[in-house]
Amino acid sequence: MAEIVVSRRADATPHAAALIEGLRDIGYFLETAISDIIDNSITAGAHRIQVITETYSDEPYIAIVDDGDGMAEDELIAAMRPGSRNPLAARDEPDLGRFGLGLKSASFSQCRRLTVISRKSGQTSAAIWDLDDVAERNEWAVQLPDDLAGLPAVEQLGPTGTVVLWQKLDRLTGGYSHNAAKRAEVINQRIAETERHLRLVFHRFMEEAKPIRLLLNGRLLQPLDPFARKNPATITDPEEKLTLIRGDVEIQSFTLPHHKQMSKADWEDIGGPEGHLKSQGFYLYRGKRLILHGAWFGLCRQSEITKLSRVRIDIPNSMDADWKIDVKKSSAQLPPIVRDRLKKVIERILAGSKRTYSKRGQKLVDHERLPMWHRIQADGQIRYRPNADHPAFADFAESLPPDLRRGFFNCVSLVGASLPIETLFADMAGTAEQIVPDHVDEDALSQAVQAVLTRMLKAKKDMKEIIALMKDNDPFRSAWEDTQRIIAATIQTKEDK
Ligand SMILES: Nc1ncnc2c1ncn2[C@@H]1O[C@H](COP(=O)(O)OP(=O)(O)O)[C@@H](O)[C@H]1O
Ligand SMILES: [Mg+2]
Image 1 (cartoon, rainbow, N blue to C red):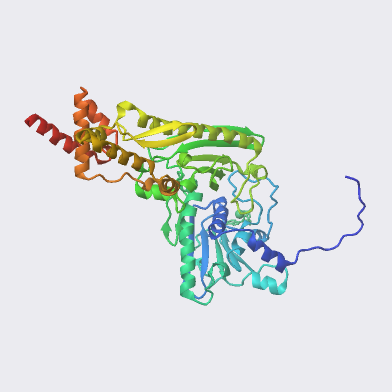
Image 2: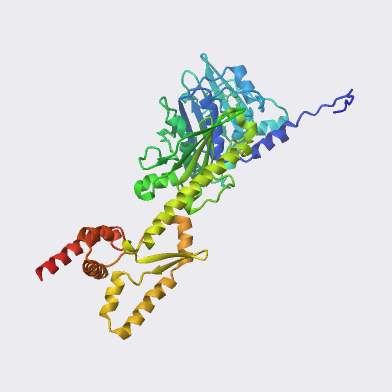
C-alpha cells in the first residue's frame, strides 16, 4: 500500500446510547442468549448452574447463577466492557467465549437492565448496565451499586460464583407489557421451549464424569443425546479425524434406531418439536458445545431416506475464523477442505440407506416370499401393483364362477391403480412412523390364512416353511397372534376330517 501521510485525527468514539441499542439486535433468541451466559459459567469452571425465573411479579427477572471462579471488582468491570477481549487473541482450550461481547449482547437482546454480581476471595462486587441510564447520559459508564441488598437471586451465591441478572425484560412481554398474567404466560412458555435447547446444547458437559448440573427453577435437567448412544440399536460408525493447520476435526456418523426400537418418549425427545425429518444432519460442536444442528450444510436434502442419520462434527475453538463462527455461536460455514470430506461422508450414508431400502424392495418381488404387492421398477418409474397371483386372491377367484372372475380381478387392479400416492408421500415426509397397515378383520384374515395354507400345502411346501413365509408378510405379520391361532384351528379341522 502506498504510504499516506496522516497528521490529524478526529475523535470518532461511538455514541454510547446508539451503539449499545444496536447490540440488542444481532439475532439472539432467548435460548441462544441463555446458552451464551451459560458458556461463560462453564468457562469459569462452574459445576452447578441455575436458571431462575420470576415471571409473575411486577418486576419479572431471569437470573443465571453459577458456582464458578467469580470475578474481583476490576475483572468484573473489564467483563462489562463490550469487546472485553480481542477475538484474534488465542483462547485456552476449554474457553467457550469468542468476541468478548456475549455477556453484553446476549443480555441486551432480552432485557434493558443487566446486573452482574460476582464473588471471589470473600469479596462480592456488582456492576449494572442499564440501557435507560446509558441513553440518558450517553456515556460508556457502568453503575457500581453501593449495596446489594434487595437484588434478587444474590442469596443463591456460594463461596465463589457469579449471578447474571436480567431485569426490564422488554423483549419478552409478547406485547402484554401491562397484563402481568399474560406476560408471565408468554415468558413461561418461552422458558419451557428453552429447556430442550439447553439439554441438547450442553449434553456433553452434563454427561461427563464430573458433570455440569444445570437446574431450571430448581429442577435438574437431563442431558439430551442426539445420537441416542445409550440405545444398543444405534449404529455408530468409526470416528474419522481430519488434521488441519489449526487443529483436528473429528467426524462420526450415527444411525438412530428405527422408532420401533425406541421408547415413544425417547423417540419424541430425540426428534424434538420439529420431528426427525428436520433433525437429521450434521451436529457441529465447538469445544463440546453444540453450535449447529439439523442441517446438511446444503450438501444433501433432508429426506425420508436419511431421516435417521446424524453426523457429529467436533472442532476446537482455534478454528473460529475458518468456520466463521458468529457472535451468537449459532451459525457457521464450512471450510472447503471439510466440505469435500463431508461430501464423502454423505455419499456413504446415502449408499447405505439406498441399499437397505432396495433390500426391502427386493423382498417384495421375491416369488418365494408371498407378496400382496409387487414393486415394479422400470423406465425410471416405480409402481406398486397388487399381486393377483397371491394365494388369497387366486384361491378366491377359483371359487368364483368363471364369468365373475374377470370382475374380481378388475376390482383388485382398481385398488392398486388408485393407491393414494400423494397423500402417502405427504405423510411420509411428515410423520412416517404414524403410518401403519390397516387392521384386517377376523373373517378376511381367516380367509387369507386358509387360502395360503391350501395352496402351499398343495405345492408340497413344508409347514415350517409356510409359517416362516407368513410371518414375514402382511397382513399376517401385523396380526401375527391372530394368524397363529387361525393356522392352529385350520390344521385341527383338517386333521379332524
Ligand atoms: N459467569 C462468569 N464467571 C466468571 N467470569 C465471567 C463470567 N461471565 C463473564 N465473565 C468474564 O467476562 C468476560 C467477558 O464475557 P463475554 O462478554 O461473554 O465475552 P467472552 O465470553 O467472549 O470472553 C469473560 O471473558 C470472562 O472473563
Ligand atoms: Mg461469553
